[in-house]
Image 1 (cartoon, rainbow, N blue to C red):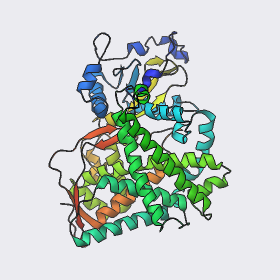
Image 2: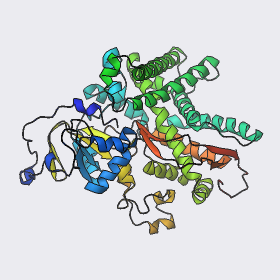
Image 3: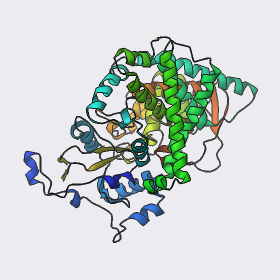
Image 4: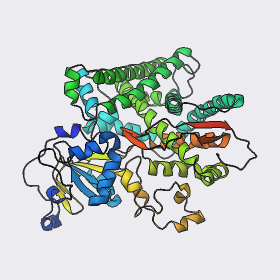
Length: 487
């Protein structure tokens, strides 16, 4: 996602690309033939990119470029590296299922890479590559993505969400209330992950020390993404060498997050054995240090992914009475559809990235090894050719049995890929879907809520897709006999 800075370090071979398929000799098109916007000498389109909002509005900028140039285009975005953006769902599927290779490589935010390089902080799966990544990924796949693995999560997730809803009920019994949703859902996400890690070991659940640790940790995780965004468009190496505040803030947030994540994992390891995820990984003979790295990053990644999707889902529901009624009376299917639809409109990551492992052909073009390909899933999810009435929030579009679906002629499900595809798809997608569905369903069943923001809410790219202002929803208890929706 962090596209505008760290790609300048990628080096491209200057040789003429080797064509890899029999028919490729007929292809005369290379990266130089791909549509690209006109730019000024030396600076290219940098001024235009900055004027459009730079990194925080990159999803809209790229979306407009696709409308202007088509489903595949090339642009440097003010850097020195050609970036290839693709919004065609068929090409995106080919990228992830056929071209990413045995060891898929994605683009990492430059501040995170620099931090790891400077401080020798080896990180989890997100930062691993090659055989190290593959070996550990296979172990995680076995327990997080295999068929039926949801059973490992179900009780911890539902119990944690139940406690969360009960706490809100206490507040609502006093009067209507407006919680700080971002902080609430960040903390809930951390609580859910910790419950999955602990399993049936309650050693930390009632500990005030544990509660303080988690509160501090969830706030630190949130600051990682906020401070990373502030480093957009700034030479990170210079910021670090000059010890500027923007770098110090980022470093502190990562320091605290990693330290607390490892401390929490260590405390669980030192406790009694349980059926939680940490003990399961240790039984796979995974070394404790590897477990700490992988689980530490797993916990950090969980916060933003589920917190913001929950926020967007509730905002969209607060504006759609029919969707709320469907969710209350058909929760078994409608909950999942609500999350799918919310993530179509507001994917956590508006872009998915891969660096080609070898020379290859994608569509009508040949590309050299090392070319960065950016899948524009914000654009593909909102394209009328892929989804009829694409800008509308219609959860029933995902229900094959809903009679209303017949009026939606276009539905290309692969155009919405919030968890990516292929070998390096999101490792926590099953857990995330279970949590998201449970939270949104239980909150909607138990509370009426309405948006009280006076100004329109837009999306910003801040590593993930976030609201440009605090979403303010006022909550009150729902009368269970009532059939009315949020008002």
